[in-house]
Length: 433
Ligand code: IMP
Image 1 (cartoon, protein in one colour):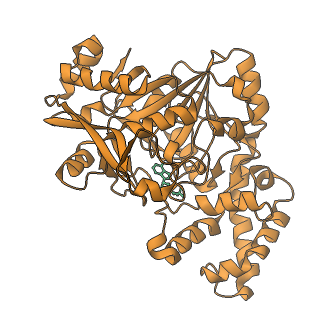
Image 2: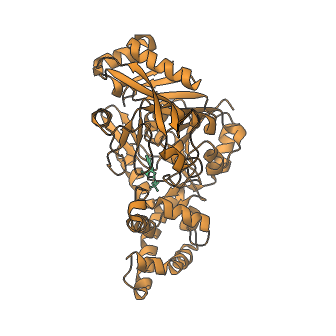
Image 3: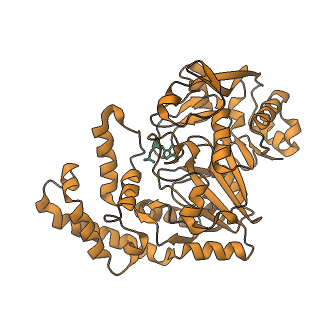
């Protein structure tokens, strides 16, 4: 399919997907999100306006039709907040939400925080948005609420049954003090979520039908991934992952299209690596260079504000993402952040138990023992905003030579063309090759 593009993260999320999606959305008719929830944070900068989106597909800023697939878990409060803030900027979102998407309920958020507290040192470092508990209930099947249930006639009966089944945990995590408070709590939640339902009802729809019809009629469809390959519940650094499939396979299960419908697959690669939360990170820089990357790259969570752990670019990870997702191209982001460093390092392999490998270790205990094997490269001078705009206007060849070498080395090591190179959050700070 030539009229579909998938954009996803190749690392641990926060690769700058929001900007790339916003950029590509211009040529798209429809933008479809397929996984995650408001654990994601996509920042889109248009002129002086900065949009921080957590659940709405990034294409909404361009006024494109936006679709939220069944692979998501939706916190209605957050979604409605985003719809309202878009309306305040004169954008009336053209939105469809899958009736099969799951709803994050009040208790999911409290259970998420409570489970992390109880786990102590074994915590995952979640965003605390109720993501894990909502997906757990989806898999459990008996205690979950879908958008179709939320906006349907039997909502009250459904929610009452769910809360009845949850009553022990509601007490355990302090949502209610005792089971005698359950009836009042049911009433409060039913009231609150009924109000959400009234707002969201007009948006609920048949997503597989809408997306497949659009593709078949030649519309340009952009699939938007949240998080990154290493946060995928199956292929990531389990258990330090999120609870959904952020990899390419998630598009099929999370929207209802067949694999033959996915055309180009673009992996967003940040020019260095970051990670939030717990878990091993072979190229992590805990000293001065790490702090410099954090400050220069504004590496603080869009969702939680947590400082991100920073490190050198890890090609082992990018090549793993290439394999898992079938990447065809790379969008390289935040190259400007590396400006001013005298020397740069790229991790080209790992040494594990005295042996060198270019394969990403599948299991966490092995990854924990991986020591990065580096290749060193020359850095380039600091670039001012004006210089960046000039470079982007004139194209790739006007980048400093060392920066070009860095990009070309990434292409050699991955065998993928870096067709988009981003040098800042603005749309104008982009080189298309
Ligand atoms: P959860 O998705 O809130 O359950 O968090 C699980 C792990 O995924 C934690 O390490 C989070 O920091 C991480 N995570 C979830 N969403 C994102 C994201 O959008 N960017 C980066 N990390 C994320």
